[in-house]
Figure (cartoon, rainbow over the protein chains, first blue to last red):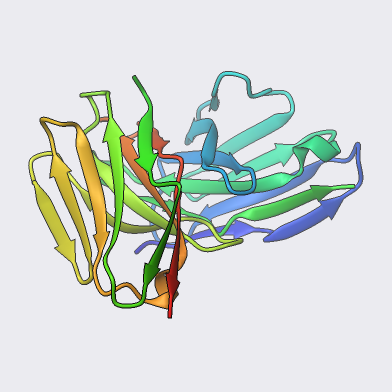
Length: 116
Length: 113
C-alpha cells in the first residue's frame, strides 16, 4: 500500500508551548488528509478534514484555534497544537487519501504527544 | 445514524481458531467498508475492505462477510495466530473523495498459544 509518513513519532513538550506534527504522503498525491486523536483503548476520533489549498473542516467540539491544520501541498499536511496543556496529551494520527471514490485512506504511524 | 456498532469489545481465541468480529451500521449512504488492524503505539493499517455490491471478500486468512439487507458486516480471521493479536476496527464511509471514515469502537483480539 501507499506510504504515509508522520513525524515525529513521539514528542514531549512543556505546557504552554506549541508543537507541530507533520504528515506526508510519500508516493501519491493526497487531495484529502484527515487528523485523528486517539485516547488509550479507544477508537479514533476525527478532529478535522483538510483538502489541499483549502481551510480545514473541523469536527464539532474541536477548537480550530488550538489545533491549527495546514494542507499547503498535495503531499504535506501539518497539525500544530498551540499552547499545549496536559489534557492535550494523546496519540495523534493522520490519514491521507487520493482522488477517486474507491481510493483507500492510508494512515501514518501516529505521534504520541506528552505535555508536561 | 452515523454510528458503526462493533462487537465484541474483546476476544480471546486459541491459536488455529477462528476469530469473528461483527459490525452493524445504520446509514444506508455508506458504500465502502474497510477493516483496520492496529498494534499498540502504531497507526491503523488497512486489512481488507468491501463494497456493498459484494457479499463476501477473501484475502488470505481474512474474510469479510457483508449483509446489505441487515446492514451488517463481519471479519473472519481463519487459523488465528499469536501475531494477529491486535485491535481491529471496522469502519464505513460514504461517497465522495472527502468522505470521512466512521469507525467502530474496536475489538481487542488476543490469540493464545
